[in-house]
Image (cartoon, rainbow, N blue to C red; front, side, top):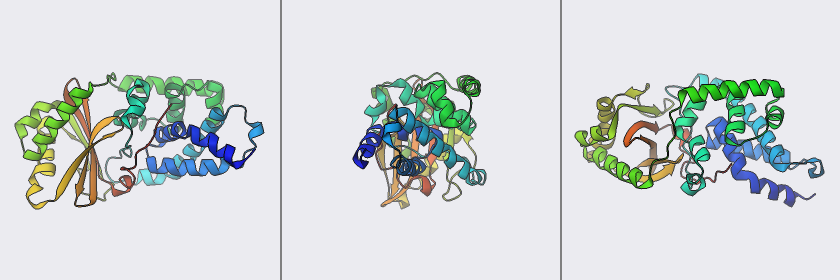
Length: 298
């Protein structure tokens, strides 16, 4: 077996492998590192011993992802303020036709998965999103099949009890609401913002203590509107801020620049015609690769 065949098999499955690791870690940057390390291990494998390449590689990257979680436990414990997953710039066509994939990479789902233990998260992702058999998952997480079945049931119950029903929003409606939101926020139209925000809308900002941001979630339409006006309108006269619209995590998002400096990514979650959550990622460490498009798959 040649190195070319190792590369060909890995490259073919890379979008799926990246998606598995990203959903376990919530970090595109760390996922890249895990895939790089996994490929080096894969390159040493005798392919004659591999019966199912997809199952083998999924097991390999899952193990490496769990190792990465353990290595980063202290960093997470010492993190300043709310921790949000790293935004993922995706080709919306990758997920738009697949509701399971679209929901699995949504910021709302990733935030919910943060409430699981690492093993619960890995088992849930492998089973519910990617449909692996229990024996394959058991080999990936290093537990018995019976234990994995119990973990899967526990994780599934936890997620289903806490997630809202996922309903894709019509693309035209998303575009309309997003355009209205941008106009209202940048012109200081408080009434316009309040008409778009759900009464219990939540603003969650992740800065890691490295940028100016609220250290706790802000809840309520009037409070969130005040944050938005201050951020996008009040600073404009003395600012060279520009905003680009993109799709991150299958959600409309604003990428804010000051000059050439990327200041933050702001994801907008829409439900029943109203904005229910706004996620602000301002930690520069989480913005390093946000402009790099990623391919996802399941």
